[in-house]
Length: 304
Image 1 (tube, rainbow, N blue to C red):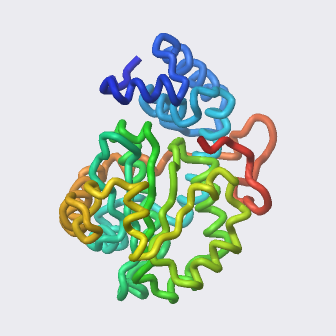
Image 2 (image 1 turned 45 degrees about the horizontal axis):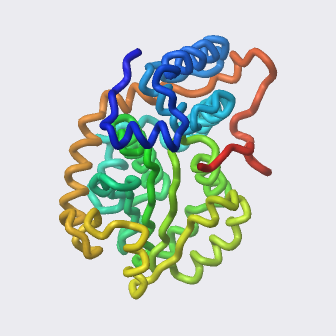
């Protein structure tokens, strides 16, 4: 078995919170590999580390791993039609990486990973929502690959102070459903909460329209704050890991952005190769499943 050893405090987390039994991990990894060998329609990364990521993300419930892994690759095949090749050197991703739009905060040793997402005034018409989503997917893929700290879950701060209403024309109901499906059903990560900062009334209305698509547990983890409420936000998000613009001591947003731009570019070959993984329904053994159909209720998977 080829997996990274965790530091003691994270090993304690996976054993106490994620049901990991170290001596049983090789057997569980083999069980998923055996299952994948009987699923010719799924082209998945089958290295031990990637399978362990799904096992931990599903609290070692093997049936849930199978469902979430298939959903993950179904979603990839849907999304690949929107985002094409994930080449960070192409102009669309360079435009996003060149602005402080998606910022992974430094590791919080005592809690979940934190991401900061913001749309900057003046970007509408220059940067498409699809390009922001593509870059976000790429950054999340990289974080999942190398940041073991993600076993503690993640928080996402979405700052809408500079949101431009023009972007609403690019946010279709289908896109919202796709994003919700990814968060709830596909990614093997633990959303600990979403903090929405400075939301204009139109965005609050949009949330009220779609919130019934969210599991109750996830709805309970969405918090709305304004600038005057940052003290309350700091009860959830440690202040010191935030950029200086938010009162933290992690450096400026542009400094963190530049570091991540370099990191994403260093993954170029891996990202281009990663585009080949997904679902080929023509090879499905049981019955056809149109992966572009996602109206209606989503498959029920646990949000931990």
